[in-house]
Length: 155
View 1 (cartoon, rainbow, N blue to C red):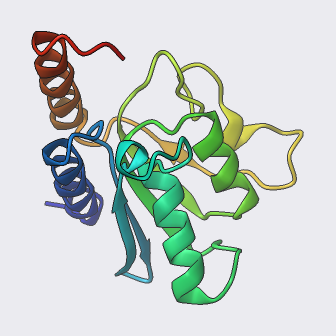
View 2: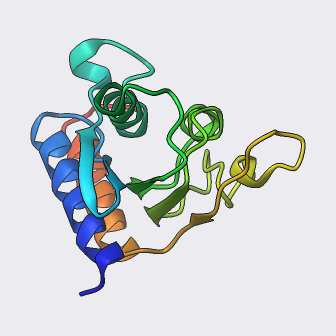
């Protein structure tokens, strides 16, 4: 297993935690110089906070740990392609790179709907690479939403 798969597996474990807690199963891990400095999973329902996405929570924690809002030497691993809010936070935090699992054809802003992380109008751009263990990420999401539909919940 290469290092990228190793960190994505950690993000997948965070996503599993989210699912067990009734959250949409998205997990994130931030790595700096080979060390995990932050990890998080979705907490939108528990915190009743629309911004409590795994990526945002991990970025906040990384900034706190490093004592700096800029994260140019950090890499984010997340199980789902970041949405507009998360991709924007990655740009303004000057994140070094992002690897994600499943593409998001509805809200993905690294390549699917829009490539916000590579938008030339912005001061900072970062490489965003999708398709890292996508089947595992997609399976977690599919299982979660199938269970929700069976329970009669609507997203």
